[in-house]
Image 1 (cartoon, rainbow, N blue to C red):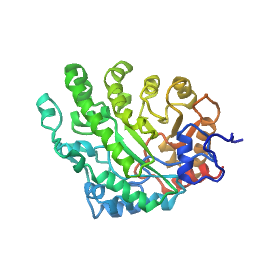
Image 2 (cartoon, one colour; image 1 turned 120 degrees about the vertical axis):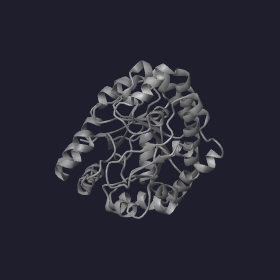
Image 3 (cartoon, helix red, strand yellow; image 1 turned 180 degrees about the vertical axis):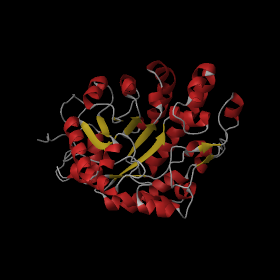
Image 4 (cartoon, rainbow, N blue to C red; image 1 turned 90 degrees about the horizontal axis):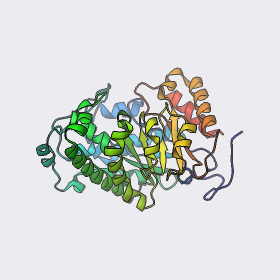
Length: 364
């Protein structure tokens, strides 16, 4: 039986936007809210058609195109929130580091033409008129807000300083990011300086998205799980706290996703964020115990996106298992729950399986 009770902010038959924000504030809404990481992307035909005609950065920098991409999953599925279509690497690109992508048909990772290897490289970053050069992202948020109206939630996002540093140092997407991890020990002052600057730029970018209409923001620390607790505490966490502080001060819900970050949960509870998004390898009971007494008020997650390849019925069963696990226990002050995947939707995912997941969540 689904656990329900009235909490501050509870209104039966909530609009999706209120449902999402109620959960992120640590309360239980009329039903579990749902949105999905990479809910717009290569698995959808509309995106593939658009990318056959337009380059990736053109889509990101043209509000009409980015909104078109963001709206496709909302037209297909009963999602409670839209997320602006963009990329975490907008910051390195704006800094003049030369970020490029493939044609959108395969699994090509990003390439960075001018990686960070020295203090001279850091000094060469193009900081002139940075808010203006990143202005296309808040403009995309404003355009999307106008398109979806006031009923649905809207999420902005950015990359975490550590994950941005990984790409910036290694120059491409790599499994181990040896360059960035070695930099922490061979040139710690350079690493700290770069992390501080990336944190400040990302924080300003999130605030610009909030001012443009985002209700909440998510920070992607996709490669945070590569670090042990000592290095995360010494390098990644201070930069993350620097990033979240101005957002939290505005009262905006902040979601943090750390792939492979189960061992970091006690540290993530010190980041100041409102919600922790779990990957598919971290259980809800484990997370609640580790985050008890922290600022975290909600959990998000955590269906393994690979489960969607098993077809609609298997996806329904897996979704029900996540819902049951998420509600199996309680921790005072940590009652909020948002359904999501444990990582982004993978290319080639059957759209009908995505539909089955969404239907299973909203039918309760």
